[in-house]
Image 1 (tube, helix red, strand yellow):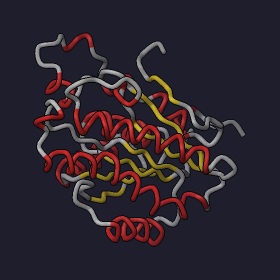
Image 2: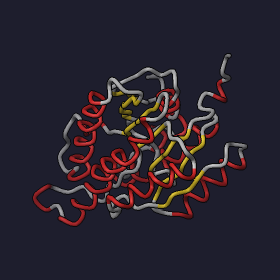
Image 3: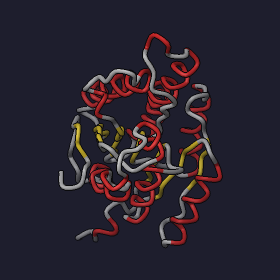
Length: 245
């Protein structure tokens, strides 16, 4: 049987963090357009509801909404999420770690501790706990995919990027460790570095730069869809997602 391009993700349930806006919103909508049942996770219910409405209006499979603040969630809340997915959906074939916060650019010497702690919890500890909670359900699938959204600073340290840069470097190493540990299982792990994207975060960190020089989030969804497909086969890869790459 030949699967149509529009149905590449049919029958697959995919959890997307940071799904309320920016790249997460675009990728979640693209997953739905390719037939996936998407679980929209984020900290702002109104934003998630907006994405939900867009998916339904476009004729996608009815998504689910799960509000959760990764910067403050406890291990039990992650376990509760995984239990809810098992009870309400029954299967999970994909997990996209896209949520991230970047509050300030500042020297390490003057980096506020509360911002440091909050950023590491949202960008590194949260993905660790969420992955740990979801792995049993992912492991029951015939094929499953975990994708982490990275950043250039995960391998090229940049001054003033503080907790965000440290969290992305840690996430990068965690993802590749996980890829090795799961290499003989049905669960594949990869990292996508989207490069500069026209999002609110990019505008905050690069004020004054020409907007037209950055691609829209919608232009970068193809690698995410490809890695979530059952026939991807990719493991332990770091993939650049800029148009033409």
